Amino acid sequence: MIRPVVIALLALAALLAACGAPSTPTTSVAAPTAPPPATPLPPVKETVVVVVTPTPQPTAAPKLGGTLIAARAADAKGLDPHKQTAFSSFRMLELIYDPLLALDKDLKVVPNLAESWTWSADSKALTMNLRKNVKFHNGDPMTSEDVKFSFERILDEKTAAAGRSFFTDIDTIETPDANTVVFKLKRPNGAITAAMTNPNSAILSKRLVNSGADPARIAIGTGAFKLVNWEPDKIFKVVANRDFWIPGLPRLDGIEFRTIPDESSILAGLRARTIDWALINDPRAAIRAGAGAGSGLTVMRSPALAYHVLQLNAGRPVFADARVRQAVSCAIDRQEVLDTASLGEGEVTGPATPPFYRVSLNDLSCYKKDVEKAKKLLADAGNPVVKFKVIAASDEPPTAVAEAQNIQAQLKKIGVEVEIETLELGVYVKRWLDADFDAAVALNGGNPDPDIMFFRYWHSTGNLNKVAAYKNAAIDKLLEDGRTTADPVKRKEIYASVQKSLTEAAPWVWLYVGYEYRIMQPSVKGFTALSNGSLIYLREAWLDK
Image 1 (spheres, helix red, strand yellow):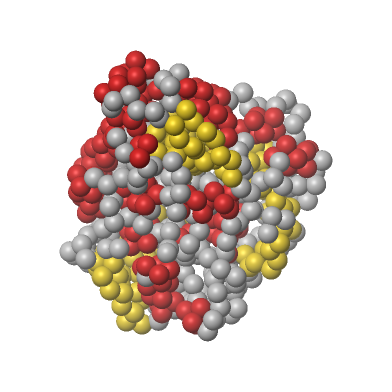
Image 2: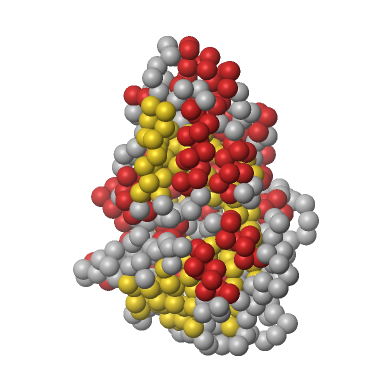
């Protein structure tokens, strides 16, 4: 049981469902058509006008200045925001770059670089009204041409953009003036605004890229912080962007991120007060950080949307027969994996992790361990020799190897032989993107909208369908319907069907969701942790020392 000085529990049910009063917003929103109470996304037809106001101040007035010394176990794996898939990259790039829209502290879609948006009557034209006087870090103004360029780059297959499939419904992009962008869609897409909050949809400078600046080497965005020094696997240092478009932010002069692979060493640095703030992934370290009334540290513990999963590659002969995949699913006690790898810090999950869209585990195939059923499925498949290799990253998440070891032990009971291959994160990501594995233990990102979680993996045209290695025409149709349906109740039914179909086919074995941990000195104030893991609100943090 964690007994920290402060524990911030961001209950996702309150974020997305109708129960409870909303928290005080940091922005003021006016919309002509209010969304139904239970909807986690605005209706398709909507106009949003937002005036940015200062964040409500803490009891003590925020102090400006100072450098935050931060630590995390895994470094960024690249700088190009359109191509990154590793969480360790997202956490840095979201401080440097801005997308058009953002998630607020309640995980609702709100304006960002776009100060408002309007849908046409037929829901096939989305007009974004950009903020005026936004500048890139080199002083160049951001205009509609930069937005058009960025999305055309994402859509260009040659880019190999990680978020391409989010935006394939875009037909054309018009820029009637410097502050207006019109996305003309092939069909209505109610999820596209949620996709525009993702770091993979960051806005780049057209002039810089076209003049030869490689986003993989030079990071110049519009975000709250500027990159000034990156020594891979050592230091990632950013300084305040004093031309940032939100007046008064960021409060810090800068942040120095130190890469320390051993989270026990990070915890030791926190206790020695040589580290101010830390991103912790290992629940064992988080529990130790909060142990005892005199720990002196603030522990933020937020229910995560990211999910732990065993990915089975149906493109490999060993998993070509659905009955073999189903046998693996039936043979695994997911709670045992959670208890072994994460000390019970989390809960067993189905494919959708936002509470509004979750399906009862009782309605999903093989969510109760059934060894006899697993053996029968293998017998029905002709009792094949099932032997495969599973890849696991050594540092993201730190629970991956323990998950693989527990799965290995459980599957041995049905005669399935598993070999574990542990890889450095950069190597793992490349192998994963190339679908160069029999199976993979993975931690995949969640999102308040299920389209963002599902489409790029499970639609046959999704840009990560190669990684998912499974196609199904019926699921394609469901996912297409989910995108074009605005009614939240109907969307919930659609995505329930998607989840039931996926768990029945068992291309993956969904395991559990854990927590996002952020640990800091009591002198660190003003930071808000989000359940999607974002660090964007470090722009509001300040040092009370």
